[in-house]
Amino acid sequence: MLNIAKIRNGLVIDHIRAGLGIRIFNWLGLDKAKAPVAFIVNAPSKEMGTKDMLKIDETIAIDYALLGFIDHNITVNVIENEVITEKIHMTLPERVENVLVCKNPRCITQVEKSAPQVFVLSDRAKGVYRCEYCDEARGEIDLR
Amino acid sequence: MVTGRHLIEPKDFSIEELEGLFALAGRMEEQPREWRDAAKGKLLASLFFEPSTRTRLSFEAAMLRLGGSVIGFAEPGSSSAVKGESLADTIRTVSAYVDVIAMRNPKEGAALLASRFSTVPVVNGGDGGHHHPTQTLTDLLTIRSLKGRTEGLTVGFCGDLKFGRTVHSLVQGLARYPRNRFVFVSPPELRIPDFVTKEIIDKGGIEYLETEDFEKALPELDILYMTRVQKERFFNEEDYLRLKDSFILDGAKLRRAKADLAVLHPLPRVNEIAVEVDSDPRAAYFAQVRYGMFARMALFASILGVA
Ligand SMILES: [Zn+2]
Image (cartoon, rainbow over all chains, first blue to last red; front, side, top):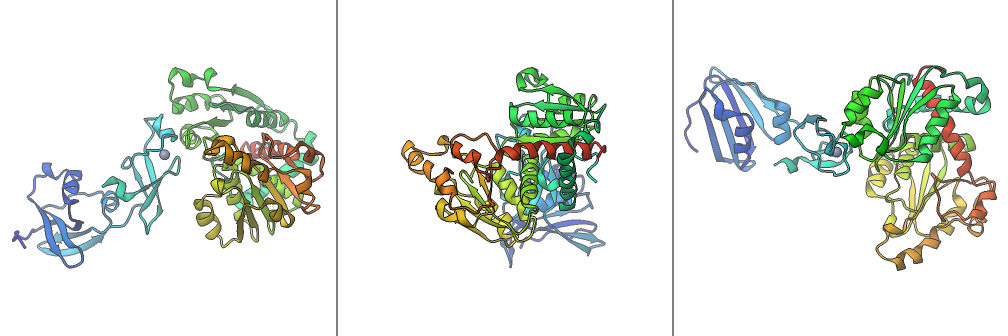
């Protein structure tokens, strides 16, 4: 594995499904980060084969609900003085706002453009979300 | 207490709240005159962004029979929606005038959206093929009034069970009560969708049967809920002609049924119930219309806090 200097205080976003890292990098706006950021793709992983990772040398605020929605297998390690002080496991959020877009042509959100797009988790095991207005199902996979 | 609440989908109200409404509707049916000033000075907005004379008249009759008044529109051509006003703005405006809104809109989720912008309670009178909770209230009240209960019944559904929103809602409504059984009678093309059998019926551990044999299913039913089989639902004329008579209720078929069967239909009917059935005491679909008005009266009186 590549040798990347340990971070002192910051976050390691680990177990990102291979290929998804770039989207999370963009989602978190890390191109504008002031601190050093390491973006590792195709790192070997026992459980996953390969995985992506992000190391941020700064403790930035993250929308964990959104991160969990994008990939609920992700773990985030919080690093303080070069030691992991917390491991945060993602879960699928109960609801997401303005992340998914409803594609049901009969849905009120198709005509009422100012309405927020709200999706509610309806099947945690399968990761299925439903539009709060019309109940149309969207899997998390749709987003990716 | 349902005072001040919206009714967007049937499950917005608990079983206890529904019981309260049905008991109130029963009192209104017995002594309608006692309620003629109950909602005096209250104003209903009846907003029909899609025409439905039947549902609109039921809402308006209910409000007027409570002594309230009604404003509104019966079709989108006379609403500001045609000028491009958003639903949110229409609702914000109208809710400044009235005490309660009843609305129908062809878009799914329209009533939920309206409820987010309204300062007064919103009653969903149908949002596309999605929810129509006052129809479900009507159906449950009819069953409760005619049978004295909404549990331990064998309920048959016949016709278009695939697209029949009223069927799905009523199944869901009845599944909340113990020991009901369902018999689904339909052509294979129009059978009850999996999301109803899997998510509502199986989850509730409820007994049900699917069949194409209407005559065989009839004798065990306590309730028969008929729906229209529309020609447009079939791929070809042949299939439609072959199947349509199998799912028509007539006097001959009715002879196989229990003496205390109640035949319901959300109306309008076309030919799925032969006219000869109308004079049979088991035909309850016009009584159902009347229960629909009492259900809406009880709903308005409760929401407005004047019951
Ligand atoms: Zn939708």
